[in-house]
Length: 223
Image 1 (cartoon, rainbow, N blue to C red):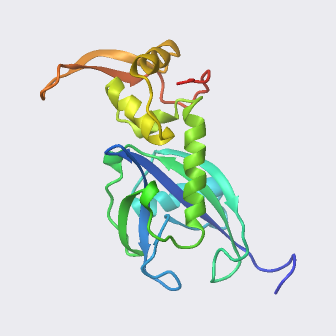
Image 2 (image 1 turned 180 degrees about the vertical axis):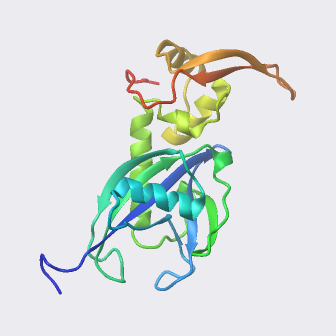
């Protein structure tokens, strides 16, 4: 059936981003079934009859990857009629953020594998997931400048050098260390814990934590 009364499926796809070893990465799963068997894709699936799209994204993320209690927000609706060869399917994509140490997961029976891939070196992806990843990266880059969204990419405590590396990795440019550190402290983005990280060849590093991990709007960082 064509026209306004055709049957349309509604799905969710989740772009899970993490910063690992100085690279911005996305969590991908390997598809088992045709027409994309062997291709990598974002975790996702159809929404339930009584679910909101965000509830479905939360469930899919938990069931397919084991991830729960992560930064998750609605990203964009992808509705190209040709995006799914199996039939008309609209996807409400979501963005999720995790520290890299939490992105080591096992594949479920639905997928042949799971892995963390640098967004700059993605393999060919199923559906329109290349566009979903690009949109997710643009959203993260934008929100990094005026929110505390970076808190979802770091562990509970960290050095300011680690925080700066997250910003540089996501934004794709080097930042002046002195200016960066002054700005994040002046904006009350982070606060010192009073503890030091010891060990290794370097002098002890002062540890910080975010002033709050609840989503907040800041003055623009301008770094």
